[in-house]
Image 1 (tube, protein in one colour):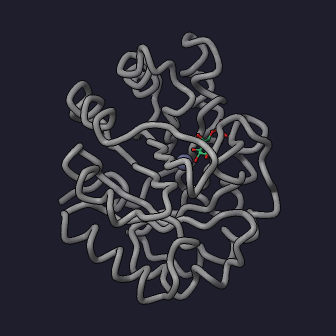
Image 2: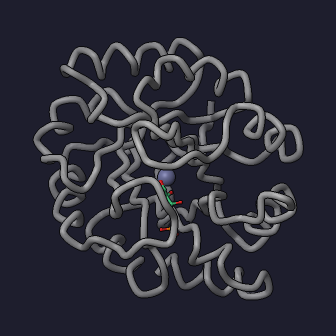
Image 3: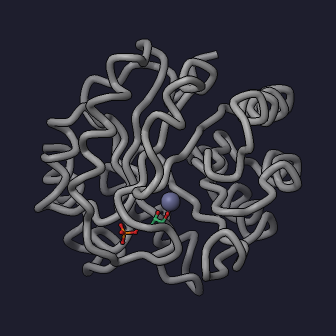
Length: 227
Ligand code: DX5
Ligand code: ZN
């Protein structure tokens, strides 16, 4: 299968975070961002426990998939018990499901959860938060299709980029094979995207930098984010 994220891209891919979109016009905003040149959609799921906020659930993901069946849905689970949500989101059309290393009590636990996602026929991602030591994720990166480095503390869009996390990207990148992607999420915009690209990231999540601007600017913003 020719999967968008497991085919080495010619340049960095742009993943608008729909958390910053207008939820009352979500499909329109999502479609317009893809028409503006973005590659896939980043879908932030928050449980009010792992992070101090709520966002959306499988029903919304399913509606988005129904409205835009061709759109690649990169679902980021910021939840304490991700295993409870893999199946609902797989059924709702998620193409990739990522969960946090911080909720895993061992390497084996992370590998077991990865296997559950794979058995659902969905691509896999592992996420690491800014305060977490990169050593925690390095032993398991081989198992995943994507490694996501948070460049803000998760829970809210529109926060300031934390440059210290770029070093994590430089540590992880040499361990990845051509079919594996390195994604960064939080505070990515025209001023920070090039720092992420230079550090080896090849999927850039951007929420407020795209949806926070007028729609007629999105094409130019996506072009600038690609570096
Ligand atoms: C943060 C989310 C991010 C967020 C990014 O908890 O995981 O995906 O939507 O938003 P911006 O790009 O505005 O920092
Ligand atoms: Zn995210």
